[in-house]
Amino acid sequence: MPIDIYTNTDYPLTSEYWIDAKSQGLSSRLLVFIPGNPGLIDYYVTYMNIISEKYPGYDVLVVGHAGYQTSGDYLVAAKGLHPDFYDLDYQIDHKVKILKKRILDGHDQLSFMCHSVGSFITQRVIKKLLEDKELEGKVRIEFVGFICPTIVDIAKSDSGVLFTKLFNNLPVVTLAVWFVCFLQFLLTDSLARSIIKKYAIDSPCLNDKRLIEAHENAVDATFKIYKSPRIVRQALSLAREELNVIHRDDQLNDWFFETLPRNFDVKIWCFFAFNDYWVHDNTRDYILGRYHNLENESVKFQVGDDDKKDFKSIGHSFCVDQTVEFAKVTIAALEEMKFGK
Image (cartoon, rainbow, N blue to C red; front, side):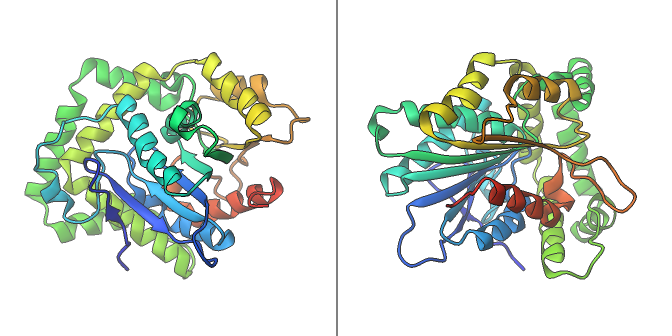
């Protein structure tokens, strides 16, 4: 079943996914999802559909990062005059401009969900929106949900250490692009898709409509990465920048976890995977030690369960093969925090 993802023609190589509120009339409440890296919104569609069904009073907007277009004829679109790389600063300003227009058009109550580096981007997007003089008194941030946030010392994670070594010793981006091009020459599209479906994405254990939908979306998204050297280049270049830029910013994080809830009445939920190859345990413990306060009802932290024989714990890449499972975890957390009340 094709996903109704559309292209935002005001911005370069940008795809979005929209869900209308199931209530009567225009909803002023907008739930925004900002992806991780690679920022293909295709991975998150089923997840946000499930959340939307639980909270029908919200319009939902999933904003893809610039450079990750997967809507329309994305392979043809990539051949236009576009930069090779859209950096973190561009991605932040990109979201600010998109959301500012939504706010001025009437969505004056915003909530955010974000994944991985999307959390780093979201922190800065919210700060810029609240500091924008044109938006003063016109927007309220209700809720922010972080999923496996890479907001501190990403280079110290297991994957960060590995990729730092690779980037320092090899032309990783160029090699990856050439390798993808070689595979496209070697394999037919149908064979490549079959390999992705059989070996890259775990098949659902149950014959459940949502599980099957999520699996098909993940296969399609991964195939789009394979077909697009431009997306491969953008994803790896952004990952390299993340390693160099995302360190310990106590000033920004103090503002986010302490000032924002206190002065702007914002609720914050932060989920950490038990074992996360992009968030070192020491990094997670540093954030928890600095900001976790049982007496603060506005800020909640949650650490996923350890692996059990009958349960696969939520991982950093939940959007690939644990969409439905993590949607249940998310809804339980939102209910506990009285989201939408």
